[in-house]
Image 1 (spheres, rainbow, N blue to C red):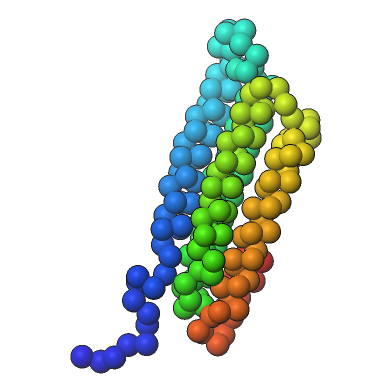
Image 2: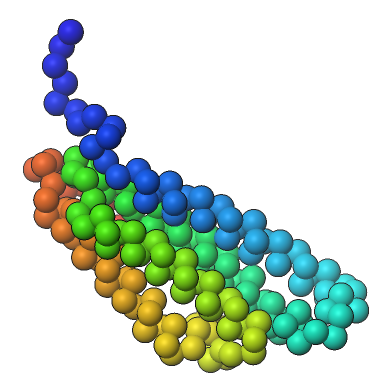
Length: 168
């Protein structure tokens, strides 16, 4: 049997990729369901049941945030963590920090959605998070870039694939 220079699958951290992929699908289902619900509210206004948290004005940012940041952002994390490991032939640097990006991102999206439903937002489309959540999300992104760049630095592959530059 010929020897292969490829690393075994256990060499990579697929757990964090799996977590981000699963939560991306969860956010997609919830976000798109909210979108269908608010579309129904436009046709049948009684569906808000005179509950402030269920009005179109509060649920629309919930829908857009869950689809853009929940689904799209989580999918971005999953694909970037997968690609950087495979193209660099190196396990993710700082696994605890990668885990923090998962819980920080998921928590930030969750708290943001709950704050919208409670009536707290900056009233700027696609940038509605209140400033404390903005800061928390910034910490998550800084943590992400630390994990990503350090993984590239630790690569065993001499070539840096162009795909890695798109995530930075």
